[in-house]
Image 1 (spheres, chains in turn purple, orange):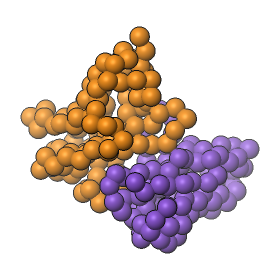
Image 2: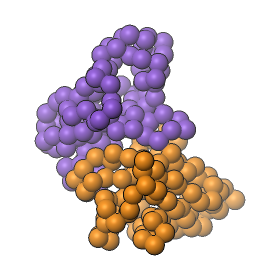
Image 3: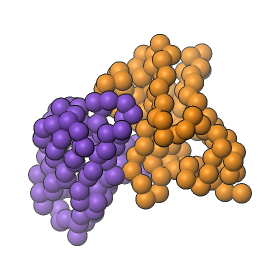
Length: 107
Length: 118
């Protein structure tokens, strides 16, 4: 299985802060990397697909980058509605696997 | 507007079988790939299985052959059975849609909470 390692596991930030989450794969997954936001009581939401493509309707403050094994999700200016847990996911090969998650809350 | 709704017993006894149903409204399950994914307390998301529009199925080997995914096209539903459950199977179970197997999960349900207890 492809192992996905996210860091940090949690972070606290203020509204307006820039936030960066990293995701590392234990083998090359080219661009087959997605990012999701999970908020309690809500349906998880796709934010970024294919490493850097913003899903329709996702605010432009979200961006994804990276290559091969190292990827990042950046929120340029944190909004209150951005709180939650963020997961990366690879779909280079089966079984599909996710990172352990990064919980973002307000400082 | 396409919506996914997971339903099923919220409480399952240890060694019992967990049975969940995902009802899709606003679109046909004869398109897309449909997956079950779970989120256990203190853990990350775990993909369980998918079933395609053509009936192709694939499972995560980590479930040790305990999972069965199926579909009822007449009811527009996708189901999951998980046998021999333990406390480790307690989780929120999500139904999710993908355009194909090598596509992101672009639509999810709100999830169904399953507790395992006697």
